Structure formats: C-alpha cells, structure tokens
Image 1 (cartoon, rainbow, N blue to C red):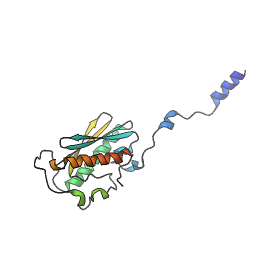
Image 2: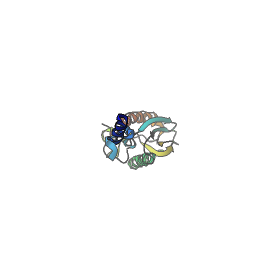
Image 3: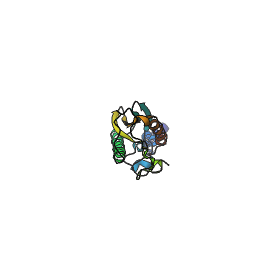
Image 4: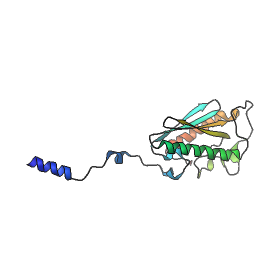
Amino acid sequence: MRLLLFSLLVACGPAATAPSTLSKPVAPATAGDPACPVAIAGTSVTVEDTDTGAALVFVTTGDVVDLRKRGALMAQQHNDRHAAMGPLPDGKDSAGGHDHDHGGHAGHGGHDNHAAGGSMIGIHSKAATIDVDSGVKVAFISFAKDIGKLQTELRMHAKHYAAGHCEMK
C-alpha cells in the first residue's frame, strides 16, 4: 500500500525541468545585430589562410540557415563599405595592388568604429560567402601586398568573435 501511495505521489508531483531547458545556451548580447554570426548560440569561428587572403569560418549547432544569412549580410556590408573606398581586389594582382590603407578613411575609422553592423575589417578587401557543413565561410580577398596583414587582422577578429560578440572594443 505504501509503495502504491509513493508511486502515485511521484507520478502526480511537479514535473521536472526538461534537460533541454537547462542546457540551452543563452544567446549573446549582440543577438540584435543581423550581421553578427556569433549571435547565434552554439556558433564557433576559425580562420583559414588562403593564397589571396583569409576566411572566417563560422559553424554552429544552432540555426544554420540564420548563420548563413548573417554571414552573407556581413560580406555584403563589408563590400559596400570597401567598394566606396576604391576598386575591390580580385586576387589577380601580382604587383601589390593599390598603396592605400583604409584605417583613416572617412566613415571607416579603422578599428575604432565598430558600431552597428558588427566589426569592420580595416585591410582593403573583398568578401564572399561559401556554404560549409553546419555553417558559412566568409572569405576575404586582399591585394597581394596586404595578405599577411589581412590574415593577422582576421585572427584578431576571430578572438573577439570567440567571446560571443561582434563589437570590437
């Protein structure tokens, strides 16, 4: 009888919290930035060097479709800003491209201007996206003379992204 009463109390007692609720990651504070890939919970970033620059590779255990949209928007915003500064690199130059650094251009401000739209890449470059398993690769092409600087800059950005936000402080 006691066993039956105990079983009924356990069965009718308060429901336990579902494990998915307890283990669900909290979205970072930059979730409102539509161009921030790491705003999606479960997203990580790595950097891949290429012959013409480097790429940020974002993969997620979360919403892959949203991640790819954010990567595409990041690339579009980057290209819009950099196209206004001069011809975008195509990866075919061998003489080193144009001799201008975009750290001081109006409206860009180097690494001091990281407000809406996520971070800004200071090295003049062109961005394109490529879908990868569980994510998106945002590949940046720079002029030949700037490849090393671009690779270094993207590693710095990736460290910030790994903290779960796109704003550079």
